[in-house]
Every structure is written in structure tokens, then in C-alpha cells.
Length: 176
Image (cartoon, rainbow, N blue to C red):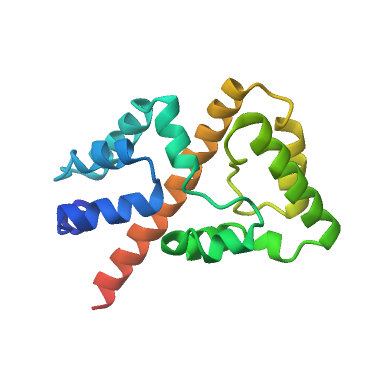
């Protein structure tokens, strides 16, 4: 069932959905090149192998596809295609106290200034306070360490987004 559904996408539609999960173009192409997918384990292996093949520049491209944690204007304007995904992933930030939001904004800017890319964290299920603590813990790291840390978080985000997309698609097909 999984591959039957997934393999019905045109190459362009498949790439569009993959890009909404991870904006590293090399990753999108490597995964799309694995189509048609013979099984769910083959799809998972293709996704993992594509991640393993990414360079630091590819990861930076993926990170650039995210709004800064708590950056509402970024969510609205720059990331219209993934706005709903990112907003739901960062929903705890919306309920945070102003002081925590200000600390997140300052920490995010310090992180960007130091590392040259925004702070990436798997935000789902984390409060703004937890994200702030993670940001403060990771800020002193070297940029090389942070590319590794952010890539690990990107993989989690991508897995969640793929799961949401495919689960929704299967449900829609089942209910049609």
C-alpha cells in the first residue's frame, strides 16, 4: 500500500513534497531518484542514504529552509510553503512569556552571528523554555559541531514532516 500510493506521484509532485520536508536540493534529488520505491524499507533506506550523502553546504541549504524559532514574520512571509508545518512544530513558542521570547530572539541572533546559520532544533513537544535551554547549551559549540547537531535535528524534522505528509495522503486515499 505504501509504495503503491507513493509511486503514483509525478516526479515534479514528489520533489515538491520532498522539498517541503527538507529543502536541501541534493537530498530531494537523491530521494526522488530512488523512485519508484519497491517497499517501505527501500524508501526509508533511500532517505537515510540521501542524508548520509549530504555535504556541509547541503545541510546549510536545508537549514536555510527554516524560520528562526519564534520568528512569526519569517513564518508568514519567507516560508509560505512550509508555514503550517513550521507553525505547528513551534506551537509552544506562541504560548511563551514575553521574556522567554526576547531571550530566544537574542539567543537566535547570537547563534546566527557566531555560526552563520539559524539555530535548528526539533521543536515538536518542546516548550519555549526547553528550546531556550538547548540554544544556550549549544551556542558555545564550534560551528563544525553545530552543523552535526543541526543536521541531527534536521533529520528528525524531516522524518516528522514525511510522516505527516504520507499519513495524511494515505488517510485521504482510504477515505476517498
